Image (tube, rainbow, N blue to C red; front, side):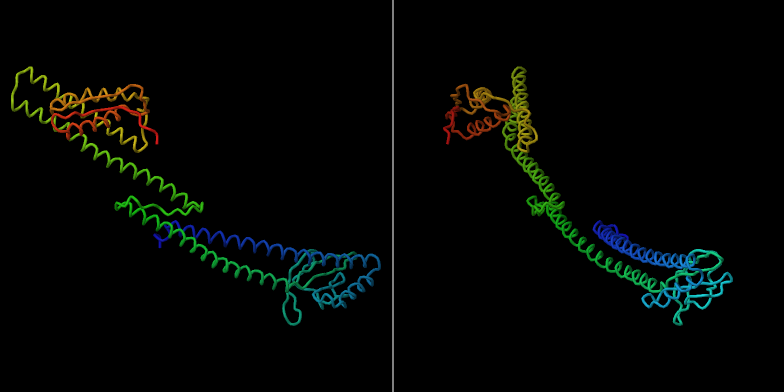
Length: 379
């Protein structure tokens, strides 16, 4: 159960349900307070008006006028819930529809909520006790049993409304949970496929503009960059294996010849210097390949500048002339100045060196490897 509650979707569903229930209860509570408040105010206003009318009749026409006013109101059938009682100072009835003074009402004037027997049943009644001049006592009230029943009905409606809100909230929460779990399951499946080596998988993003689609688009962009970096690293490894094989072989051959032939000190120094040059060449090739990987991934282009290709050709030819001569081959060049590009000079030199190295390697003995620098015709 605790693990179930740790689910974000479950907590979202519970929060959604609580929000709907609280909203429904707040609305129904507002309606209840407004309805019952209005009914109470109406009852209070009617009682005060009746009490004021009886008091005015007593002041203007004496006790006879007050009794006539009460009798007239009792005889009216429009308001069967009205309660009247006029008594002398000893609280003996003089007029009204109550047979005796209610025991729950004291001598103090004010408002009272008391149960009275009407039609063989107890009815809730709201009564105003007014002490009139000459010590007379007046009770004016209303049977509010129907109001109590109405309040009960409203409270019952509140309960049913809360239950309905709970049902709808739970249903809506489960729907939200189902939708969230579906999207999370899709993301999990895609992520597992990528972990297992399928770098081509992407998150579904139907471009509806919601938060999950924005997250999927962000993840897809990240996966594109990761795939680019991995392919760049794979390409770099292949390039390193290809470009370093020949220089390493030459370096090993040179060192073997020193061990096998055991030349003089001067010759050894010359061969060591050549080996150092070969090592520097290997380092340069390795650095160039790393820069190439950075450029392919879009990480670094800081080494780019305007380069005259004639200078690149000259440097490569100077480097490979001894190699060509050792292999009984010639290296010819025809490179005019003025051809410039924006690029990394080390990478350009490495690319040209690879071409020349392959040409020297596969050209027949006594052959000529020619380098020409020309402007290509625009297509």
